[in-house]
Structures are given as structure tokens and as C-alpha cells.
Image (cartoon, rainbow, N blue to C red):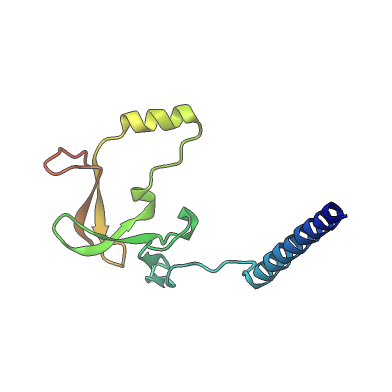
Amino acid sequence: MNKKISVTVAAAAVVVSASVGFIATQALADTAPSDPQPTHAPYKHNQAGESYGSDVGIRSLSEEPTLIAAIGVHGKHGYVRSNELNLPSPKSPEDAVRQMKNQSARSIDVYEADSKTVIDTFLIGAPDGASVVSK
């Protein structure tokens, strides 16, 4: 008789535990936003309509501004073009390997927020004293 009570109590405990877990999961799901908001501050826009600002807090490249905040080699604060900073995504694993093998240090311009005035140079993948392939 004691075995029967123990089995019944254990089964009831499992049902209660599962129910509590389900209710807690549902409560969390009900409070989670269905459309998560960006984690970065709203971007400013220049006269050409291009967004500019920091890319800190973005979750994907689609959230990047057109002009990303950067500091050039001479210490000037400005912006680099995201399409110059980010190489095209590889189309296949072989393409990715090829890109990695052919990757060399390079430089891109640092602009004022107007995206026209070049104020400095930004080095990508260049250790101190390394030669750089200019754009």
C-alpha cells in the first residue's frame, strides 16, 4: 500500500512541476516583445539621406548605418562607408576560403558626416608597420 501512495505522490509531483514550468514559460512568452526593437540609438541622417552613427549594439548588418563611426590613423573622428568596410558575403564555402586567402590589409577613407569630405584614412587588417593596399 505504501508503494502505491509513493507512486501516486511522485506522479502528482511530476504533473505539478510540468504545469508550473508550462505556466512560467507562457508568462514569459506573453511579456516578450513580438517585434524586438533595435538595441542601438536612432541614427542621424545627412543631407544626402544617408544614416550615420555608431554600429555598437546592432544585431545584424541590416541594422548598420550607411556611415559607421570610426577613428582614422591620424586620430580624426569621422565615418567609413559600410559598403567599403564590409566585404561581400561569400556565396559558398570555397568562396569564403578564397576570400580569406586573398585578404590583405587595405585602407578606406574616413569622411565627415556629409560623406563627401575625406578627413582621414582607416586601416583594415593592418598590424602596426605593415604595408597596406590602397583602395
